[in-house]
Structures are given as structure tokens and as C-alpha cells.
Image 1 (cartoon, rainbow, N blue to C red):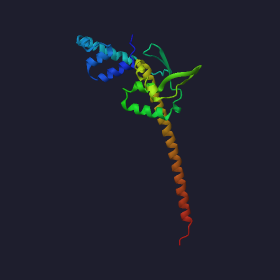
Image 2 (spheres, rainbow, N blue to C red):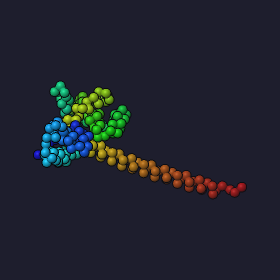
Image 3 (cartoon, one colour):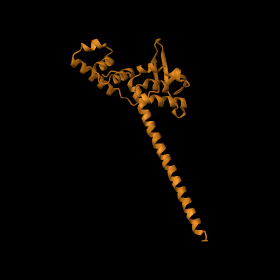
Image 4 (tube, rainbow, N blue to C red):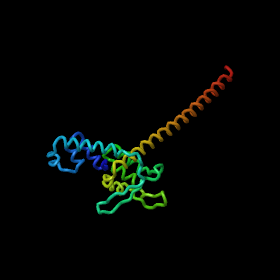
Length: 200
């Protein structure tokens, strides 16, 4: 059975780069001294098992709601932004700025996209209005989220971006066709007017 990998562990392993000791520390939570006492086969097994677990944690489902454990032991219920078309300019700018340091900025991006639920009715809900200082302060809480949930968001955004690109290209193609038709009509009318004018 595969072990659930959380976002914090994933980012720590990425940050370790090619350093096997730091990778093993991020995976196991052991100290450097404890890792150095392991045999090479044990170290290789730890890293390989993590890689296998990571492959099994690559979900594509978007989790609409997450529960985060706060330091005081209480649970914070957060919901995914219910209507991205109406995302505020502030949210948009902050996410785009954070993308410059992706993937290390993933907890902060998640804290913008998932915010505390304020009201709900059946399958619909509202989330708190975006406040950069308040919500990005929750970023560290998102390190506990399973990588599977983060992957769901990334797949969702990839598909959304592809749809937007296709829609934009379709729109541009239709606008280009319309402009070319108008230019052709104007050119034809201009040529007809010029041929009708008498020679001085």
C-alpha cells in the first residue's frame, strides 16, 4: 500500500536536489546523523519507495473542499474558489507573481485558491473575500495537504488554460477573418470608385 505524500514533504525533497542525505531527511523526518548511520542499500530503498509512492499519489480529481489542522488543534475547512471567472484582479496578480517561484510557492497559491467557507447550501458554498495578508498567512497549513489534491488543482488549471487558449485562438481567428473580409470589401469598393472617376 502506498504512503500518502504531503505537499511539504514533496517540496522539501525537491529543494534537496541531488543530495541523497537531505532527500532522505525530508522523506523520513530523521536527523542527518541518523541518516548517515544507514547503509547505502537502506538509503536507496527509502528514496526508491518515496519515488514509487509519489507515482501512486498523482491524482487528477479536483478536491472542492479540504480540511486543514491548525496549530491549536482545531480544523479549518476551506473550499476551492467557486467561480474563477470572477477572480479579483488582486488574486490574479498575486497568483501570477507567485508562479515566478513555482513550485516552492505552491502552499501560497493554494492559500489563495482555497479559502475558509463562510456559507453553504447543498453543493454550493461561498468562501471568504480575498485578503492577501490574511489568506497567505495560512500558506504553511497547506504543506499538510496530500500531493494528490495539489495535482488535481494543477490538472484543473492546465485544462482551464488549454480551454482558454483554444477559445482565444478561435476568437482571434474569427476576428481576423472578419477584419480580412472588411479590408477586402473596402479595397474592392475603393478600386471600383477609382475606375469610375473620369480622367482629367
